[in-house]
Each structure stands twice: as structure tokens, then as C-alpha cells.
Image (cartoon, rainbow, N blue to C red):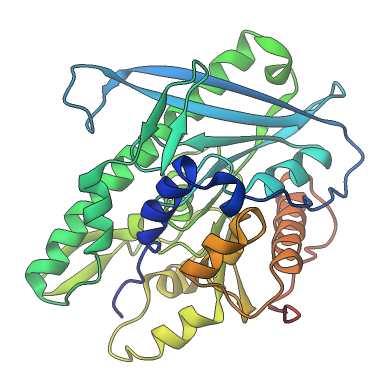
Length: 353
């Protein structure tokens, strides 16, 4: 089947306008989802320079800088680490409520702001880096045609996107490991490096899946409606070549029912996520009904107006993200905290608005 669009690129235009023109209208005050855990949650941000990588999106001769945001329990302890990657044109707080929910239940969570692929990233010095125009154009033209020439160009583009993304995630993981060994700052004294999970939304989900395959210190991965682009290893004779090696660690693939409806239109080819799941060592599949791509993020709560413009499902936005957060928590509890039962459903039916 033809790959799903990674995200609606018009989100970039709308959010840029919102940031500068009408923030109070488009981002009204809202009631955050309540956390269910007993831990008081602390928040910390930092910006790190990767001296091993040049910034490919900049014309300047400079290294890549990555901003990270931590949510972690105030209480001292030894907690699993979970790393989050936002979608294309997303932001570091795309799944703020999910990260806070995990931290309240005894996890150290770090979200990565991917410069030039996020709508914007603000570093700890207040510098804002906005989305790269060429990247935005590539995302927008992703589904323009099905010609072999176009599909080959898309394949090459997505390889470049993921190279940047996985580079960021690996850099963040390696930096955290180094800081933990040096006992730097409170947050790094609380991390159990023997228990690490990854999750992401859309392109961030693809990133989590790719890094989960290549590292040997990851214990579980969750993909929130992201096409597993890293599982494509080539494009030849008009066909995508998919990695035929079984996915080696526990993997949860979460999609809206629209993904399955779209897949059914392409009976001559199997959606890459389904192929990966069929051949994975430990795979679980979850479908949410009456939701849309952005319902797996906080956006419908943070900005109902923007979410409505981009399109959301008929499901209640608050109930949906709270259900997503609960599912993510219980999945990681099972694989990172060794709980006795995997408390997730195969299908979720969310109440209408």
C-alpha cells in the first residue's frame, strides 16, 4: 500500500500563525488531564551540543544542538527511563500529558525537540529554531504521486529524515548514560539504565522503532501511528524492500481504524507495519476507533481550534488522550517494571464528543 502521510503539513503554517498572531485565541487555557500516580513530578530542560554531527539543515558550519525536556519523580529512587520523539511539525510538548503521567507513576521521561523538523524548538537560552522549509516541502509532497521516480525520491528523503532523528535519539541516550555514570544533577541519579523504553508519535514513532532495532539496551518500544520507515531497506523496480529480520524486542503498534481502512485499498501489497508485526519476536497491535492522527497527541486539548482545522475524529479528545496515556503506562509497566499482566486492549472505542 502507499505510505500514509506522516502528518498534515498545514499544521506548520497554522501553528506559526498561532504563535505570532493569535496565541490566546488558538491556545486557550484548558484543564490538563489528571495524573494517576503518587509521585510529585519535577521538570527540567537542557540543550546539548553533539560535537560528532554537523547541522545539515543550516548553511553555517556548526554542530547540531538538541534540546531535551525531562519529567521525573521528586522522590529519590531508581526509575526506568522512557524517551519520546514527537512527529514531523510537532513540538517537544506534543505529548506533555503522557510524559507527566508516566513520571507520576515512577518513570524518568525525556522528550526530544528535533530542530528544523519540529514546528519550532526553543533552547534553554531562549533561541527559537523553526521548521526547515525544504523539510516541510518534502513532507507536503510525500503523497503527490505513485510513480516509481517519485516513490524513490520519497524513500531517499525519509532515509535522510530518519538519519537526523535517530542521530538525535542515540545522542540523547548516550548523553544520558554518560551523565548517569557521572551522577550529574538530580535527574541522572534516579535513572535505571537497565530499563529503557522508547515511544513516539508519527515520524517520532518511526524513529523509536528504528532506534529500538539498532541498539541492544532498549527493552520495549511503542509506535503511536507512525509508518515504520526505518524498516524499509531499499526501493527497487517499483517496490519497497522491507527488512526481513524479525524485530528483536517488544513492540506495540498503535493506530486509528483509518489505517486499516487505507491498507485494505492496497490488496497487492502489505503495509510495512503489518509485515513487521507478523515477523516480530514480541508484537502487540492496538486500534482506536473514531479517532484521527492528532488524537494521539495533546493538541486537541491544547488548541481545539487548530485541531478542528486539521481534522480530528468523532471521539472525545480528553477521553482519547487519557486512554492513550493509560495504555502507554500499562505497556511500559509490563515490560519495564515486570508487572504480572499486560493490561491493554486490542481495540478501544472512545465516546463521541
